[in-house]
Length: 251
Image (cartoon, rainbow, N blue to C red; front, side, top):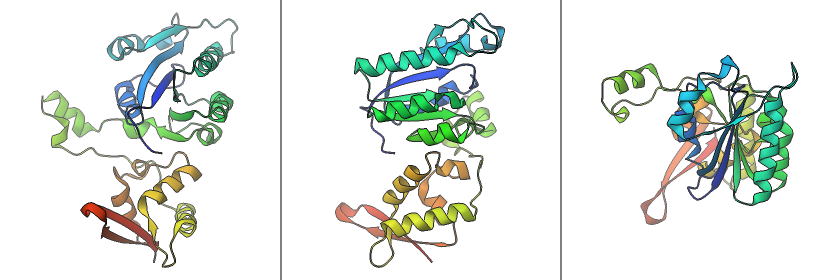
């Protein structure tokens, strides 16, 4: 998925289904794809289970939306988020939405927003059902946004985090199914010599698997991830204006 700072995004957070500990990292990730113009979070704030969010909201300028649970066992928060999302959609003030939740109840909402031409980014935990992931254009796991213990140590010592590279915890493994996905994607894109441009390959993988991200496999960038797969051959070429272009083919 292409990133642009000019993309206006509505960020809607389901406080019942995501942790509050990594909100700063989530918002930093969202800014890679655009500028948050709406930042709203939904919960029944009278419940003690969401008390941990209160400080986080002030620090990150997120607007809390109160939604009482009128009936036991029913999630009124979901309805409030869906209604607000449709209101924002028809206001024509945004180009896309970021739905922060691990709840499959937002699958239809994500589908409807994309039908209206909106870009939809999902953020949730690894336990998020596949139906919601598939409904998003891009889905990001919260687990890969968490700072490592090394980063936390550097922060508390007063040094900048750039001094030590971030450790990425692998959530997935490169199995036969994923190799087959790469092979099929390369086949779709390859020239007569079997080479496919790395940028096109990344976009193709994301279209077929919205939660694809090299960070899920323990790599911060696409190229080192591709180089780690021994079934792939990498060719780094110098193109126009001395810019490096990377091509991939199956061995």
